[in-house]
Length: 495
Image 1: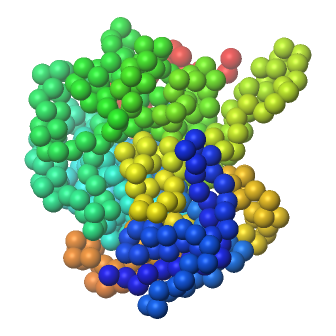
Image 2: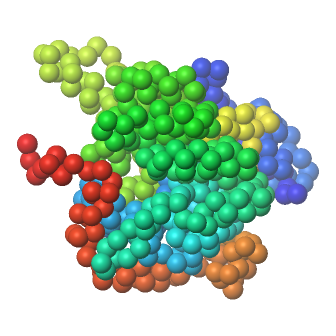
Image 3: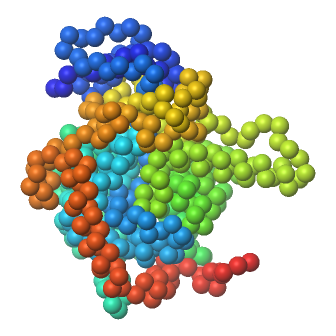
């Protein structure tokens, strides 16, 4: 067991029963993987490591409830993409990944999370072109030290890029067997990595899906995540379809969910399901107004959380998503007043609400609210420490630390990240990763520092991009848009 860890003399962010967060002057003691005490002037155990947190903010790690961890190598390619572009240039490029590409992209993404203060991720892993693919992703996640719900995905698969064709079988013949084997091995990484399912094929026939979900339930898998779109014209909504299979539950995370009917909203609220808003990406890719902070969907606010979605598209920072959600919502609400010739008398959404989205509400979305999402005695030690004297934090951190985290912080302000009681970032730098037996097929090293990850990652990137350069992306886009249900008559250059 690791030595006790005492964070001494900092400002500790704690939540009250109404989810309001505030800073208190206190020490925080970690024993094993749990928070043992929060109080002033804790006497250090003789064997403890003591970290001076004077002029530091001690906060709960952030929770990202929707992310595709594999696609690190594609960063920089999507700054001007709409969703119909990204489907081909981003999502479907997992077909060009081999297991080693998955491992290095996944590991880099996990480390990137912890660098930015994210300690838990719901990973919608739509990369399963073989039985080896999820093994590589899980091996990287488990070795990294990150906490994760790994969403094993039954994803649509490209058969060929020249000519461009999809595999006619949405669910691979080996998919359920692979999932069952993984379920027998789970959890992974000393219990940090739990197994879930990611699924988007709600249009498939009932005679296929009903027995499939019964098998998944029999495996003991509870967590389900899905990209929630309205469904196809003339058909029941995807929310209704999910409910008919008994998979709309408190363990379900609906990503985006920006165009829901009143009936859908009622069902989500009734079943205590959850929503992951990814504001930066949704606003770029014409996916509608983010569900979080939408005044027209007030009933959904308590079930909302935040995700980065595609870290190859946007900044992989939950505070950045807090800011984006908050300011976009304020802009919409303020615009209503201005359009009526009025000026609002008060702000529409608050910093406190934004902070809850990335912490305690995220914990509820993954069903771990009794373990993570806030700092309290007995909870798991998923903790981040900010430098209150950094150029971007100073003065604000001393006045209102929560506001300063939401409105001003960047990953560079985080000097320490602790996951499950283990320090993963120290003095502003990521620590080395121990190579586990499951990760040894991908490296001969026993420890991996960041520079050791970068070298094979860049090599993988070059290999993947060489494959992409040989493909006809325009033709693939036309075919993919039809399959994904785009009405081409509605896709226009201007209004």
